[in-house]
Amino acid sequence: MEDYIFSHFNAILLLIVFIFSSIFIWKILKPQNPLPPEISGGWPVIGHLLQFSGADEIPLSRKLATLADKYGPVFTFRLGLPCILVVSSYDAVKDCLSTNDKAFAARPASLAGEYIGYNNAMLFLANYGPYWRKMRKIVLQEVLSSSRLEKLKFVRVSEIQTSINELYSLILVAGENVDFPVKVNVTNWIEKLTLSLIVKMIAGKSYGRVEKGGNEEEAERFKKALKDFMYISMEFVLWDAFPIALFKWIDFQGHVKFMKRTFKDINCVLQNWLDEHLKKKERVDVVDGNEQDFIDVMLSMMSNEDFADGHSRETTIKATALSMVLDASDTTAIHLNWVMATLLNHSDVMKKVQEELDTKVGRNRWVEESDIKNLVYFQAVVKETLRLYPPAPLLVPHESVEDCIVQGYHIPKGTRLWVNTMKLQRDPKIWSNPDTFDPERFLTSQAGCDVRGQQYEFIPFGSGRRSCPGITYATQVTHLAIAHLLQGFDFSTPSNEPLDMKEGLGMTMRKVNPIEVMITPRLPSVLYKF
Image (cartoon, rainbow, N blue to C red; front, side, top):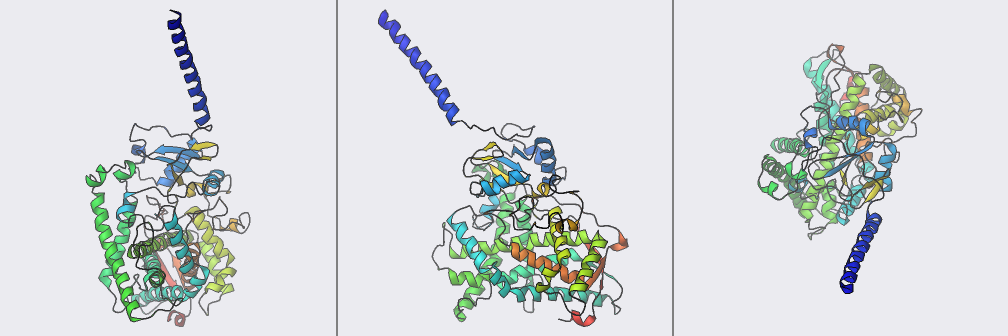
């Protein structure tokens, strides 16, 4: 009997020890910091998908800004299985993109990246690792470095001058008297220019306009395919919310079929570019350092062997070229469009910029890149437009590769990060009268603020490892193109009514309606004959 009692006592004792040990270990291992607040209304399995259906036509950045007013600058929600962390304050953004920059350096997987993005070989979709580091280094050194951009300066100047000449020609076609205003679609002009510029740098072609002997059908096919890429990238795809193999094969939404068709069109054009360059390389011995465009550079640097992560040389070149074309043409065009729209709705500011151009440059020659440093008010206008209308109001999503702490909250590995730059750059704690267009703020209180992502209250191009590598290029194109427009023409809206400033849906801040304006030349006619 004593043995029976003793054995039961030992069992109970062991159970008590096990329970207390488990509690002790759990307390040690469990996160000491709380999780961020999660917005209400979530459902089992699907999370908050219904709240972000987009049926209300409110831009996503605006919707998230409203939620930040309620839940604070750090909160989460779920889109199916993935957990999304949204940050919108200076301190939270600095925690994510500086303190925890490496932890958030990954990109979340997406079906568009797999089917259209060359299995995530595109630079802005590639996951953090050796392949991404090597490709970014090549792009920064061989295309977007200051020395390379200076070498390609003639491309920017010639494309912008050609575009200005086309704009002037529209006026001449309208009638012999060039003193009366002519109605033009500035948005179309901008989109043609930005696409033509980057394709010229990447492939030596001009796709904004058709060159003599060019392939108009190919150009139009490519432009449509790029628009389709942006469209499907912003659509809700079932697999992205529920990454189950079944949703790749059973295409309920028809998105996979759409992606495959879009990829076919894009790849056909990029393969033609590559084939043309390969044939040229066989005919001409290109000397290192004298390559004419990015594809020439890539072919000179890379062997026929696999480059990295299983991507062939051809795939790597095409994926990187596509990434650069999309980044440089779409977001730059969006920004230029907002600059013109904002100036048209603030005619006094436009007049001050034109007066600055007349004083610092004059009306007997065209503005040059070397003049921009002296156009301080004009630079402030560009910055203020970027603050109010960042082309990417939500930065490209990041994903945490390890647990980390953001503003005292525990962020588990695998959490996706959305940085709401639109909300950040209108924070009343940082910016006085944050919704007011006021370029002077960048000449006074925010004079030291630049676009490089080092000040975490102003990050239109992102910050940290995954910031946009094309900051210098985008800034140069914006300054030179807008300066030419404002120096060369006077603008007014039809009936002198203000433009609507409605923002489109999606991850980029596209202006919904195009800009149609009345223009009149303001320089001697001889200057328009480049």
